Length: 326
Image (cartoon, rainbow, N blue to C red; front, top):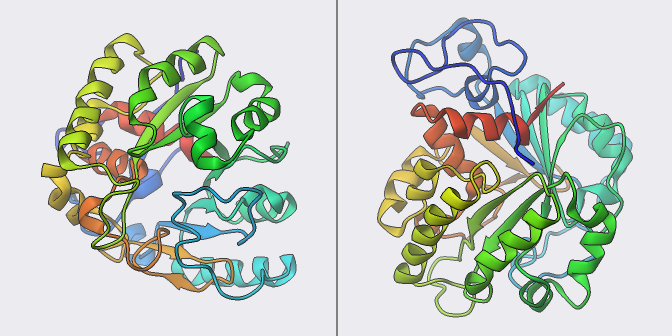
């Protein structure tokens, strides 16, 4: 199944045309930021924060061995639904944020909260473990996390985790998936793609494990391994066109040699995006939390965002699907 999404065609400057955003206009609407280039509009001056992420809960049914969330265990219990939504609404009015990425923990352990929370924002996306029921009647792009073939995934996410996801997602049919590449699953990329393609999934995105400063070994890929993985993904794009959703420019930006350029384009680092924890406290520098090595970032969303701003129409199409317009 190939994903189709409507997106604005960039103008001669390689960016979406300025003016009032319309439904499905793509990256300018999703990630419009100060300093992105092009003319500053009245709207951009009024709305200093256009993108944010929030942890809906600190709870999760899994304890993935590579998960950034529990590297620094979040302090404090979850806020009540009422307090969370009231606080988020106030924050939204203050900042003018328009696009929200719902994370956790497992956001869909609180489906009613997420359903109500998405009504605050023009665009919403969510990442889920796929190990809890996916909510119905929610206007939100949903990406399910799987980290390779059953053997590779379960070594990272726990015994039986792959099958739990298949049970939740009707065998994967019609769903978007994301795989975080590490030293433990890098060799199963091709088999993993083939399996989900046979299952008629909607598509797959790949990111890389983002280590902490000074972290080596373990899950961390060497520069040579990461380069090799990017080369492989570029080749597989030709075989799985429209299914492997990382674009060629966004993959190139995930090479070790491009780390400075990716970090320089990150809206979190530039103060153009904000990450909130489960108690609506600001997380620094981003949703990965303190200590992450920004110069080894493997975030697929930020790589897509950066190349989309440079005129990568395919990346904008993917972002339109990840962050659904209300």
